[in-house]
Image (cartoon, rainbow over all chains, first blue to last red; front, top):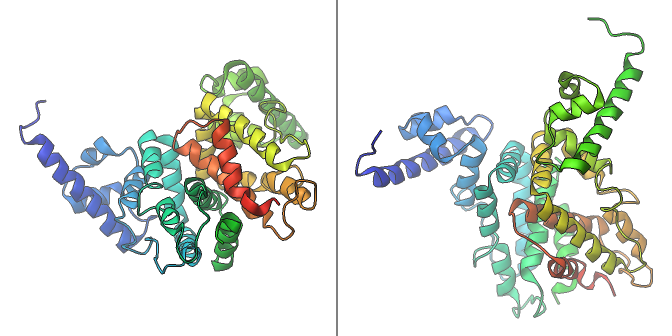
Length: 191
Length: 191
């Protein structure tokens, strides 16, 4: 089969339609009731078009999550100027999402374990100015300062890693857990 | 089919034979070349007997890993009296294992994401006296003391979580990375 000349352009449009359909269905139904068939119907593409780019529902939803298409701004880091309070608030939200949608986070992890490209996306999402480590970097020298020289990338890894482990162990977590975790990890890194 | 009266006893023997065969084949061939067929032949059981207890090769190997049947004592925490040095040495070994056998760790994570019982085993392995948090607890008040009141369970979660994240992101790590991670997470928790 030869592709039409407009193939790449049309493909990108289809790809975006699929991601948007996934995000819309996720908002309406939640992760458990989201199906590849439903996404295909909503996006106006065939199932095979979806499987051309994503090997599983988990991989597809993982991309949406990492693109920031799910949860609107709910999972964005708050920025009140107090990095410790912001991290606690963010972790509390993340824990609530894990409790409400355990299948979502576990599928993301399974997809990251199975597909290197999802793992790479997960890693990329940890760096950059909008990321946890970016925010920790920005907090060095601020009012609720982190000590200069603090390894922010490693602290970010520790925070996200602890979240991943909570999800894997299916343990329920609340705002107190979030506070304990932030206190333990940031420790005396904050003056 | 009715089970013989000695069923449970014979089942436990078969279960142990399967775990031992898995460990032996893992040592000989590594994770990638280990197969359920090979384990069944070595243990003298049928493949269906294995699938009765474990749903995948990943789940089977995960159980061996969490039972301490792989790597002999190589993955045990060293105990030199210096908890920070011990953690660094242990993390360096773990990073080397991840580099040498990426499929092993990723399969463990995929199995933990898919099967709650594997996730629970992973969580259980984090507590107890032989665990990271147990060792951090023991280090409170020792020569290279951790501050009393330090949340050792959360610190252990952070350390293991960071390891999990490294595995998922397929990033190579060395002794320097291990040292940076331990320094960042234990921070000033050690006096």
